[in-house]
Length: 261
Image (cartoon, rainbow, N blue to C red; front, side, top):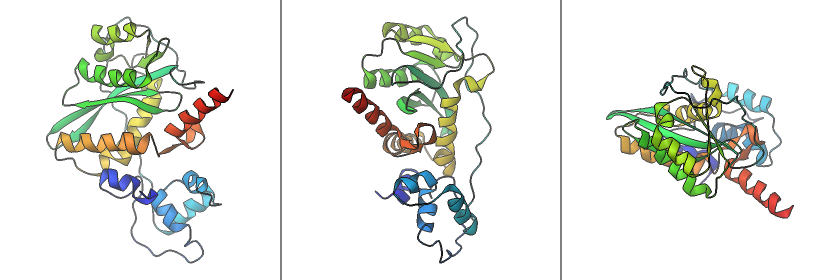
């Protein structure tokens, strides 16, 4: 699938974060304009071997009346009172399976709210576990955690970070962490930035997919989210915090280097 249609195929809409009002390209930059319109990220253009900088892409976007889309305000979905440990922020890690972060967000559909729980490995920012349902009960969070556990195998010693939601403080969730030798860490009350990596992912998926179109049913939304996470976000989308690499490729490169060392 071509880069220009990667997310359009997932979301059924135009590429994320851009709105085009159909101006004609200038002759000088016509070679780069299709890439600027369809790829929408200068790092990915450069990764293809094109010699182009951010300012040039920004200029092309202005010429074609292309604009960015601002993220919506953060809204907390979970919180609870408990005495579980609270850790300081630490978002830079040296290897996979050192720190995981988890949270829940909401998705509006015509059939009612759907809730999305994710677990992210902070090394690569890869979504290693996720689950969606029409409720926010503990099993939603545990389903996402179970997916991460199945994917990662031996995870003894991992630090699991979340907000103070009742789902994460529940006996069932804490028992699952303990059974796999995972340490629990939780955000300070009222401070969403303690879990900023997951909040950043939620802003990204909402701006690039969820807010781009209406969702008639939860099943429609669930299918699109699955495609976005597994076929685009984890495998193709480049992330600035890991050198503009795709998340899966970043992990593969790390493991190859470890084997060669």
